[in-house]
Image (tube, rainbow, N blue to C red; front, side, top):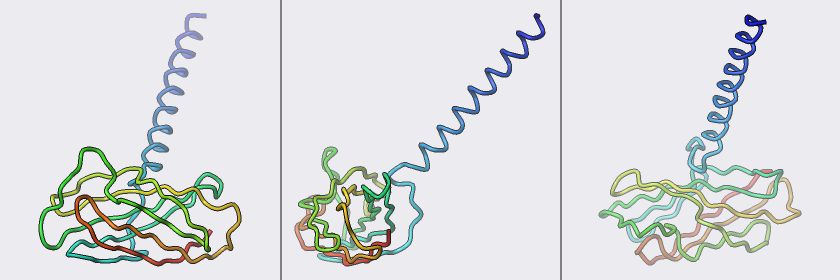
Length: 153
């Protein structure tokens, strides 16, 4: 009986450890900044370049996450107290105008940020749709950045 309890305790500990490892792997792979970088599209204004590096359609097609970088070629970008980097963010997908939420960002250097924008997807869109992201301010810099790209479901 004592041997059985020892085996059961060890097995329970192993299962618990395995659950933590699986959860940790899942959580890190679903971080808003975990997408591999490529270039979907970019726009530059006033020495600041906004690039969409990737996107993912999640939540059974109900949500899209756009991954982006912001780089300054002329000087340091300033960080505002926890507010989103992209101001007055507008996203259109297949003729639907949507509001994006600047969900998460992190400072890579004084001249570079990475972030993610979440968008609720329209209920019905074609398998391949034209899309655009527009903003008129990045941090404290006014300008106009518009990136046109294709979304594949």
